Every structure is written in C-alpha cells, then in structure tokens.
Amino acid sequence: MGFAVERFDHIVINCHDVEATGAWYERVLGMTRQTFGPNHRTALSFGNQKINLRPLGALADDPEWVTGSVEAAGSEDLCFITQATPEQVRAHLADCGVDVTSGPVTKTGALGPMTSHYCRDPDGNLVEIAVY
Image (cartoon, rainbow, N blue to C red):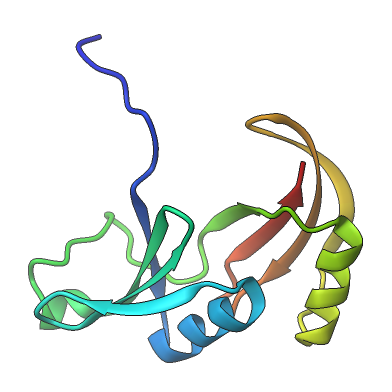
C-alpha cells in the first residue's frame, strides 16, 4: 500500500430541508452552522470535523457538487462522541423533545465499549450519541 488515510475530513448528508436539518443539529448536538463557497453551501462544524448539508436535487443547480450513486436522504447511520454522561445525554434529548429510539445501550466503538443513545434527525438518519 502506497499510503494510509489518517482521518475523516468531512462527510456530506443529503437532506430534504437544509434549514430544518441544520437547526436540528445546532439545537440537539450543539454544532455550529456556517456558509461556504460561491454557491453558499451549508456546513455544520464541531471540533475539527465538518458535515456538509446537501439538498436533494442540488446537482441540478450546482453540477460541481457530485454525490454518491444513490441520492437519498435518511440513509445515514452516524455516531457522535460526547464527554457528557449517559444521564446528561438522555436528559438533554428529552429537553429537546427528541425521541430516543434505543438506549442507553452498550456498544463497541472504535476505542472500545461505550454507552449509546439512538435517535433520528429530521430526515430519518440514525444518530447515535455515545459516551466512552
């Protein structure tokens, strides 16, 4: 192998409504929304990570914004790590009016055992919030 990757830089989530999706991630997960590029794309940032929000059908308006072979909203399974306690995660989700679909449950992440809560974003993506 000539090289090895070291980390993700960003991911892209296809969504029905960029405004609603961005607002949910800001309110529920504390991310910061930003606008970038000549076509005023929307991204969410947290730590050294970024999620670009791509509206369905964006290719028609911006041919340079390519996507995977299947353009679909709600097909992602995302796991986010927090330093909060599982009890704090559960309470915050309840305060935000977010339904917990599962949790707390023990799962295995990249660094070993973690406690997770699962919910869904406005597009139906599965969002896992985990604590090591």
